[in-house]
Length: 362
Image (tube, rainbow, N blue to C red):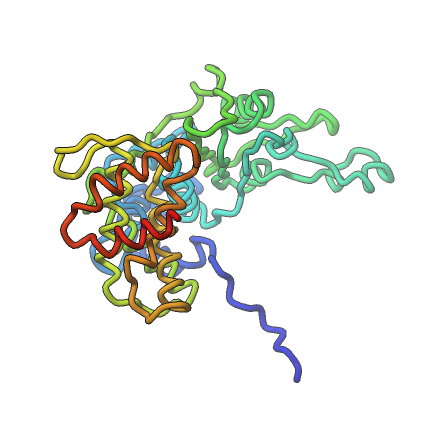
């Protein structure tokens, strides 16, 4: 039996591929002014992000003004820094902004403690360099280099994880809109449409603060955690549905109740107080972000589908919640045990979850 040479469907298409129909429809009907190099107007970009209540699905659920400020920033000569705690959709927003503005979200630099300056500027094909000497053909452009040359948006993830000297390679790029290439006695100048979206958070270890010179070249937009439980439930529900389709998981009944339960647990422990405001709680060491809630529910769906009866039940999400809460076994176990015994045990309709969580804790 021969195997088909057709490529398998990708697990997660890029935003410009997954939402190509929406982007094309918005661009087609968009008669408002577009900044040079943009594929659609700023108003259409915001509509793409927030949805229109009809054919355009919301990609970000939150304050409209935040998205308007972010999009307006990219229409100026200032770069955009999306700042927030882990799980506040910084990467998600940056991808969709790049897809809507440039039609390409793949010009990405992933920041780590080991990110070299070449990831921001350029590197060399050393075989050609040794054979021919410095030449344009031997140069290996970075995503930022390409975005400048093509007039597109570049994305820099986890900017504050990069070493300070690598971060500062962006200063000349952002201020002069040029990248010198001294080995060739030349430079690459940014074409209209070029800009940078960076993301950062200050909650993780290994953070390198931005220099004042670099920070001045960014306009910072802080993405907050969801404002209320209903908003967070909506976000989790939508993203779980998207992931379920991508993973080809069947629709699981009664998921709404368990999503509400996961969000309630996360919000109460994150805020240090119960929903009714009557009981103060200790908070665990983890962030308990919306992204983690999405992961817990998606894992529960997989358990219900493959090892259960096809109905999402408390036992399917309990183990995931315990794993998300108890990151430090010494301190977080105490926090979780107190919450389980003083809050969950006495809550109406939560008895099955209490038993499942107690068993999952071991």
